[in-house]
Amino acid sequence: MEGLNEDDSIKLLRRLAELYNAQPILQAGDKKLLATANKLMNKPLLLEALVVYISRSNMSIDSAVENLFKKSNEDLLEFLYEDAWDRLSEIRKELFYIIVSITSPLNSTAISRACQLVEIPHTVFLDSLKETHFASILDYGSHYEMELVELSKRFFEKKLSELNGDIKLRIIEYANNVDKYVGERVKIEQEYKEDRVSEAFRSEFSKVAKVAVNNNDFPKAIEYYDLAIEDDPFNSALHDRYSWFLANKINDLPKALQLALKAVELNNKNCDALVNVALIYYRQDNTIKGDHYIDMAESLGRARSFCNLRKAIARYHYTFKEINRNEKLQFLDMADKYLRIADRSFAPQIPYAAKTKRSIDKFKQLILKRKNAIKFHE
Image (cartoon, rainbow, N blue to C red; front, side):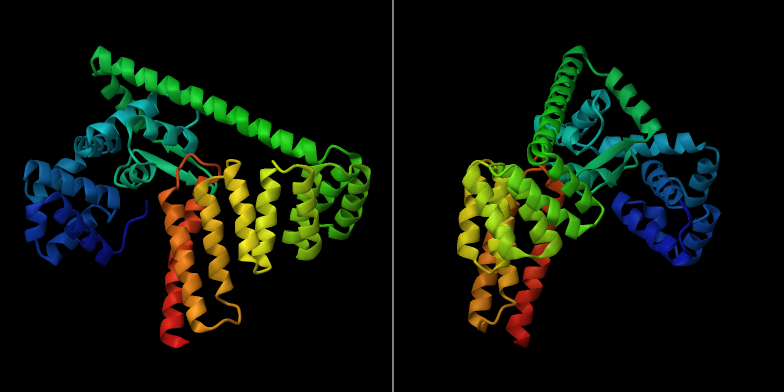
């Protein structure tokens, strides 16, 4: 990492000193801290190592700096790992033992399952991970991948090797459980995607329509979707995909609703079609019918957090319509209620969990902001 500027370096030293109770740094003046930070090239990792070193040894600042200069980068990291490890609870330690033992890719699905097994909230673990230098997170929105630093991986393996036989056996059982769970999830999701695509786009006309959408050739897509419907009129998935295209790419809500309702008529267990109908009704400001179809989707297995989130979003947007001030506040209160239900029922293992969680957090702020705007400005 690049070095910080001088002011930020001093602030970081003081903040870390308070966190670790490093008295020599807390008692030092800005001039001394600036000189120290400059010696360490204002690099955050070195500044943190210095503070931890002083808090553990109670050395003077100069003696601690001299000791740091004798250490290699790996020595410094391992020193910080030991400190971070000592501050972890036994549950978090057990979680890292599992993580280093599984053979599956380290992603949100695997980590979520491991968190379930040791009974620690997924979000709590991710927040605590930020306080260490064990791993980096690559967030893709709908999911994330974790990459352990190679040295931290060796560090965990070493700690694991020091455990007694019974604990090791439990860790192996947990790791096998995670691997089995991830394998099953991958298989189910792959089958779902393949079934969904193969079912909707099984005719030549529908395949051409799909390619046209991907190429942003919307007139051609409409032409071939119409041909596909004529050719395969009882295909619920095809009606649903055509409806989604019209609603989200063309903004033709009346025709999209007609197709979505037909998709449900052809297969009343088509959860995607039910959600699609609900969202179209919401966009047409019909919250009663929207709720009816979103409730049907929930009854067929769509996540409760997702369904209540959609109810909350629909009511938030409704407050921008021409209704009076009291009605707006009532709709915002309802939106707030549904959002709280969505937050309480949220589970990290649901499909598209990261996206759902981001939307929940986003609309918490938007609803609060909208309430304040109506109360004080309208």
